[in-house]
Image 1 (tube, rainbow, N blue to C red):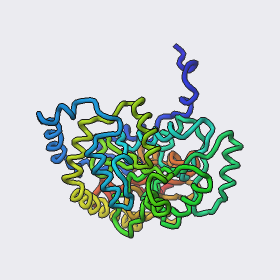
Image 2: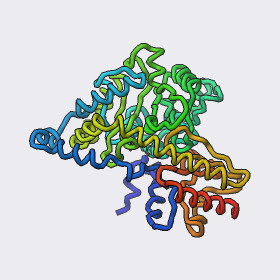
Image 3: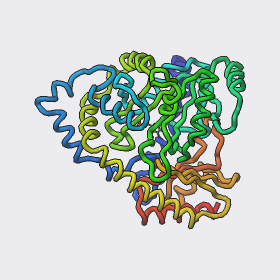
Image 4: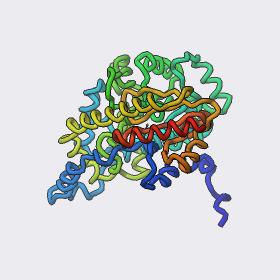
Length: 402
Ligand SMILES: Cc1ncc(COP(=O)(O)O)c(C=O)c1O
């Protein structure tokens, strides 16, 4: 069978994620890994989930938790999320919430909802690799989103038209972005809203890390800023994607979209066709754990990850040779390093696996055009002082040798 003959054109854009391939190599015990952007499993609220699952499977609940359910998601969980959204400046009702199987599924659905082949998506340069993976299936072009540089809207319009489509949305992680750790300030958010209004496009606000702020002042979500302009969520163009993956646990695959009802209604149609609904059992357990433990669990995560971020930044200050610069994130999971032009992050990783045995993600994977070869992403979530100091000292040696 020659599969290439019958594959849909979209498959030519779908490549194995460099990060996923890498993670497979990193199980060896002597490697100190800064590669995976994953929560520390030692911090999972495992006992709370044991109890939550037990209750969800009790005689009283199992007729619901093991049954088919509505595509919108489990009502009490949607209600809990809506109340939480109100607490961060986004007054809404459960009718503005759709439960998804992780925010990754929301990105796929939004690509399906908005992109025709040849359309343009505005994305950070670099941006979250998984967003590019999700959108690629819908065959878009990408243009760099740089709210700071005041590029006229007409420029974006002309470029998209020349490529046979229209600009459809701007995608960004405004808080502690993956991969850079950088936060877009209030001025940048206002400018982005102006640009989106000018272009008449949607904004996809990926808030996967928003709850993990370690210091500095919280910046209102883009959706909150837009509600302040328009008066209510149903008049807004910003589509907010949230997730329990970084705050509770990624294994249950529970995320959500918060948006205007006309957007939610169409996403419900997509979800019905794709998978009917996210796992009912996981939604009920997540609701029990979130309503009982979120308020105490997240401050503990902030404390722990904040300390690890400080350890990484202090080690970088000590160990990095001249010519290397890095970001100082106020939250999230990542520090982004820019190396001298002549150092290639992918070659550095290959050398590291032979010599110093540390792992990180080469930065070019996060650029839609494969540029940024002299960048790497480090995650600080998994290590405490001894491993952090040793790993960053090894990185220093590796860079000095390069
Ligand atoms: C920026 C960003 N968005 C979305 C996701 C997907 O998360 P999930 O599908 O687990 O909610 C990730 C995962 O790493 C991420 O870094």
